[in-house]
Image 1 (cartoon, one colour):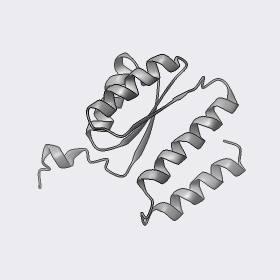
Image 2 (cartoon, rainbow, N blue to C red):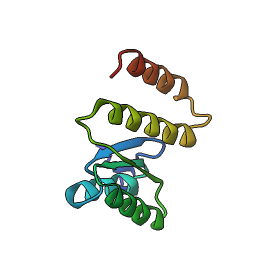
Image 3 (cartoon, rainbow, N blue to C red):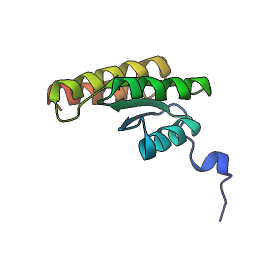
Image 4 (cartoon, rainbow, N blue to C red):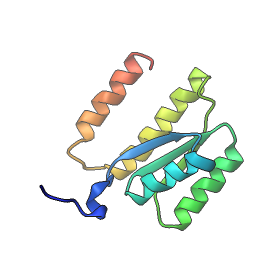
Length: 114
């Protein structure tokens, strides 16, 4: 059995994670660990000040992070979150082989109004 090094155990380079409630407490801890593993992190919460603070902290550590104020009980805000996260994905995956699949998936979500 091959044992993965801790650097390869959780390699999320080129991935984007949306973390709802990601600006404080456990949510921030999850945001931090995902960013540490290489993910582009989109933090969302109903409190934009806390979102901005968390995003700045991650960026100061050299991580790629963005933030969006979102109340997940409001459909239009969730759609805006997905659109903003998609912009973040586009920035990080300009020429990725997965781009076509991601675009198809985004179109699928939009068509079904998910």
